[in-house]
Amino acid sequence: MFELHDAGISKRRRITGYVLSLLPSLAVLGSGFIKFFPNAEIHLLLEQLGMADHAVLIGLIEIGCVLLYWSPTTSNVGFFLFCSYIGGIIVGELVIGDFPLPGLAIGVMVYVGTILRKPSLLA
Image (cartoon, rainbow, N blue to C red; front, top):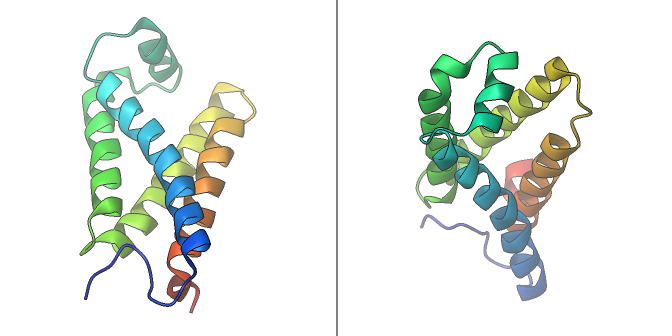
């Protein structure tokens, strides 16, 4: 009924999709949890964006996106929310003045990993 991957795809494709999806998910999940604790480096970056006061809310949003993405019943909605959040990561990196390589890498891995597992999202 609800699956994290489509039926009929090869085992190699499914495993590659899961690996490419899991790595950025762990990175964003870790980023979400670290926002609950005083961390000078993270809060300095959020201060540059004018969002240091909202660190806990941002952490909750990150964790929520990852949980929705990995829940079989909400994985499609979670995918689109996760991609939207990654767009915000990229914009934040650009505002700070950094090249958005981490955000782009996370975005590409989530997108390619999900499409490998669920090609029906392209239809």
